[in-house]
Amino acid sequence: MKKTISTVLVLLLMFYSFSSAVFAEEKAAAAKEPQKDLGLTAKSAVLMNTDTGDILYSLNENDRLPEASMTKVMTLLLVMEAIDSGKITFEDMVSCSEHASSMGGTQIYLEPGEQMTVRDLIKSTVVASANDAAVALGEYVAGSHEMFVTMMNDKARDLGMKNTSYKNCTGLDAEGHLTSALDVAIVSRELLKHESILEYTQIWMDSVRNGEFTLSNTNKLIKQYKGANGLKTGTTSQAGCCVTASAERDGMKLIAVVMGTPNSKSRFGDATKLLDYGFANWELADVESYKPELSDVSVIGGVDKSLPAECGMSGYIVIPKGQKDAVVMTSEIAEDVSAPVEQGECVGKITLSIDDKILGEYNVVTSKATEKVTFGTSFKFLLRGLLRM
Image (cartoon, rainbow, N blue to C red; front, top):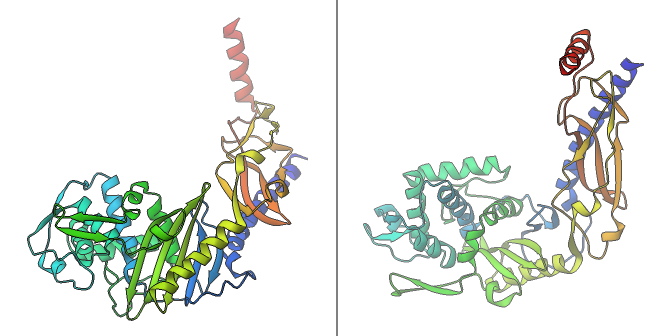
């Protein structure tokens, strides 16, 4: 009987692992489902929920294309990570190299040897999309532009950006410098985890060099779109006009990536359509509000006859607007387990869904461990009882 129960439990846990993998694949494929035609002019586009990473809309999201200065999202991510780790600070003075000053394109005209704080270089990179400022930052973090580009590609691999290959930290056209709308959304989401970047992405106009050089934000959505708070534009002859636009309304955070539009007006128009679609049709639901009360799990052959179970249900799920009451919670939890049992051992799962579409899966685990009853453990507990007498 015990052997049969153990076998059933193993099979059940194997099913949980398989279903979790299938769920991950279903989420990744969600953007492939039939969706409304928004009439975009872009070659490629993605709408992502910032909190969950869910893809709410996509168009050729894996096509590899030039991204222009949206490249600087990765540049800024590595700079923010260096700051958060204590490697550099906002107030560090950076000396501009010959290489950085020679970038051309959009720039703040740094002179070789000119010094500027990390803070002002970040502001120049974010607001004015300055190529010289971006390279100066990269060189300061990594020691050279080449080493910084290696860091960028390593980070892209770590984030699962399968369609990305960086050749520089600016986004200036270069052979093989390619990414996809999905990858841009992924790195944009990662950058937004560093909330201090929003201090710069929401600047409309500012200056550096004690007010001598004016910066004007290239992202016009900051002024034009309610809730817009970032993130980065990009324009080159090969990439066309691009933007990764972030916005928040009523606690709902979205990222809209648009690539390869014919002009600046159309990129902002496409981003507006994507964001409007997201805010009009989706909302967040607090996962914890669906959390059930869990009973103890019986233990066969254990020192403890039962163990408390717990489920770390937290965060949010994205659901169609107005459908919070339509979310269905189902649980599959083993009635009993055989000792020994480890703390944190998986004994089941809880699933949230709407119309059979899985929105989230959460493991149910034991909150403590217990040993198997043996002659040794029985003697140990008997001796402990005698000593207490």
